Image (cartoon, rainbow, N blue to C red; front, side):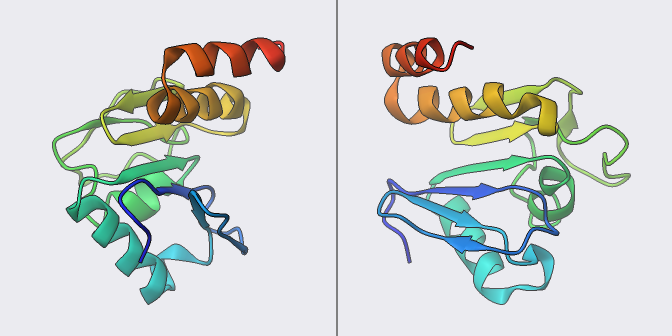
Length: 134
């Protein structure tokens, strides 16, 4: 299992790759069917670890696991779950405490900068955004 400083990122659930450098674990192997991914996300949430999800993943992966319960979140428009204990805001990116959600492909830069800001602070996020001409 990753250490508490690891960030679990969930892009589209239908993506199929596994990437884990030292401080970032990118889980995209058919989440809802992967016991390993589900176990990692549940453990990460239980210890208050950082989790980020974009596109349909907030609705299809994090919501069924209860990770969004009581939180503001966003997801791809039209994918909002009918039954949820989250408040789906419709915003491009929602970054609150340890859970960051993004609504889709057009929001990837804002999503990435929110992850950097949450993990490294405002100054680093501003420097990264400036270097990316965002």
